[in-house]
Length: 455
Ligand SMILES: Cc1cc2nc3c(=O)[nH]c(=O)nc-3n(C[C@H](O)[C@H](O)[C@H](O)COP(=O)(O)OP(=O)(O)OC[C@H]3O[C@@H](n4cnc5c(N)ncnc54)[C@H](O)[C@@H]3O)c2cc1C
Image 1 (tube, helix red, strand yellow):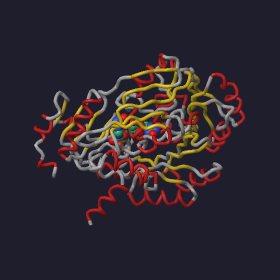
Image 2 (cartoon, helix red, strand yellow; image 1 turned 45 degrees about the vertical axis):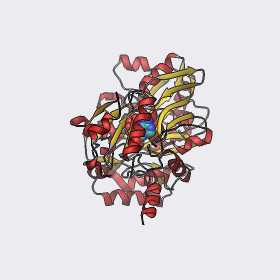
Image 3 (cartoon, protein in one colour; image 1 turned 180 degrees about the vertical axis):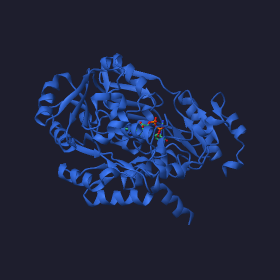
């Protein structure tokens, strides 16, 4: 059935006490995310609007909505905080958007783990976890708005990844509870390796209602800025600091072109210096400082979270990951970004050669992390946008030097970075969403199966 033929008032009537919105600015607002970082996606997605927004408060509400969606055969797009960058929660085919932010209870905290509903904002969850003397293993810099379910369904890594690896690393996520989209929805709990069936599937193969995550004892991290004359020196320092003897929660380098986007940091990040932002265990700080001095680094800030707040300064993680791009876009809309993983061992001469080749067209930003037990370097270069063709030309140049690219200008899981069709995720979709109603258009492998069946 075409969405226009649906009697949305009747549909909403079947949802009982579930709050819904069927018109007004919120309909459009809740159909958007942070895909405007990409001028290509911004143009492509600007007319995609949901027909109905629903706000479940309990898992029973979720089941009721899932059953109605299945009966009426309408598209259902899941939404957390809407901070995804690839149009992940933009309803490409309209229909229902399910806003999860009212499903937000922290169910249980134990030493080493937390059980939480998927719509909890990560910042709120972090507060509860901290009160128990523990810390989340990682989070995106958007933690005030982003939900934990959205991070697990749409995210990859984040602040904390240099210590704990990426979300996909074993035991970081312990359990995902999923509601299926069928006339009689079922509840499935995934553990161990099965978690990968739903993690980073962009909400295409199940509604996550609850999660269990690993926790570690809390630490009062020191947020630091260290300045370097050359970006090469900053990279050499970060490479040397990517070693087990340094206990870090974040290690980010940006070149001096970023300084004007961080005016509020003043002399702590002047326009003629390159900066490394880090979160350092107080037990490691002396060693960290000695290493910085060996690379001619000069510390311009070192404060814990309380001191930063008292001085109205941002945490180091607001100068990292995609927050860096956000700072640039706030000042100048001509920027966009790309994402790459550098080949190992990390080759600083290659970075210097690329910097020389692209000049002012690119400002360099690197994140030092770990994945699958190994240190890894991700580049999130800020790129002056001219045309789509140029974006792809730049990506091909990166690839010709052995870098893996994660295209931020596409909406499908596979084209964005996974590169391969994940058969385990597709198999799980057969079970959890047999009618193919969840987030249509985002899983290329599934669309191919549907097209084949139709031909
Ligand atoms: C400034 C900035 C910084 C960022 N930094 C990082 C970073 O460090 N690391 C990183 O990985 N990402 C990062 N991102 C991307 C994004 O913020 C994260 O992925 C974030 O965690 C998404 O959470 P959200 O609640 O906003 O999800 P949304 O954007 O609402 O949704 C993301 C995806 O998850 C699906 N989804 C949401 N909730 C559910 C659910 N309950 N069940 C099933 N599917 C669901 C949606 O359909 C969508 O496909 C950043 C983005 C911005 C704008």
